[in-house]
Amino acid sequence: MIKENEVEKYLDFYSNKFGREVLEKELEFVESKLKDCKNVLSIGCGPAFLEARLHQLHPEIDITGLDNSKEMIVQASKAIHLEYGDVQHLEFDDNIFDAVLYVTSLEFIEDYKKAIEETWRVLKSKGRILILMLNPNSDFFKDEYSDRNSYIGKNMRHRNIMEIKKVISRYFFIENEEYFLGIKERKIVDSDNPKLASLYVLEGIKYDE
Ligand SMILES: C[S@@+](CC[C@H](N)C(=O)[O-])C[C@H]1O[C@@H](n2cnc3c(N)ncnc32)[C@H](O)[C@@H]1O
Image (cartoon, rainbow, N blue to C red; front, top):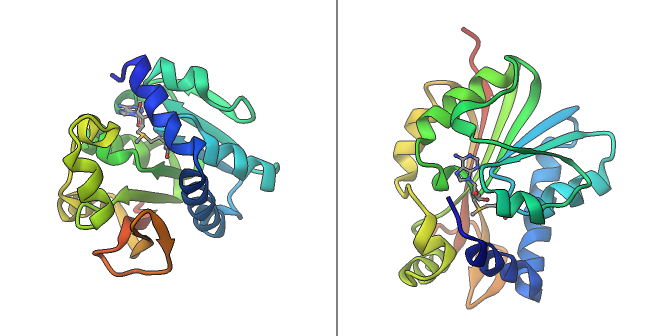
């Protein structure tokens, strides 16, 4: 579980121009994928900045953010529903969400396989999973991860994206995979080149039993 000063460090990222630009790019992307959903669960929402902006753009979408860090939940935007909890043991009923979103969070979860299983359970039939993961092959990631004091360096648990994809494909039909959000010398560039793209995205549709 993350400590308070680490949360402050994490929030610092969004307080500068670069962090805000990253947020807006992620938002644009997530909005294009989820704008037609009625209810969305965001796992590991952290400060929920993206979710709050999505709510501003689409107040008709019912958004719930869940995080297992009390410190993050305290900081999180109250514009959406917030739940303090662990994705490995969700307290939601089966088959209730249209979509489950992970924005740079799946790779930080201890037992991500259990998280995927729980995601499958709470999604409705043909429900959608949208995962934005840090791309370990990108220069941006390598820089951040090499700093063992950075939030990523300290808290990221899984780096094998192909292994993660294999687990997801047991529960979801993978509709799309792509590299997104190029970053070069801390500037956003339009690129899906895996060396520059800071994010790897997977979109899946729930397989019914
Ligand atoms: C890198 S942060 C991402 C936060 C946010 N989605 C964003 O894009 O800024 C990862 C988040 O996952 C949360 N997390 C890690 N393990 C979790 C778990 N088992 N259940 C719920 N949230 C978890 C952390 O507390 C943290 O807020």
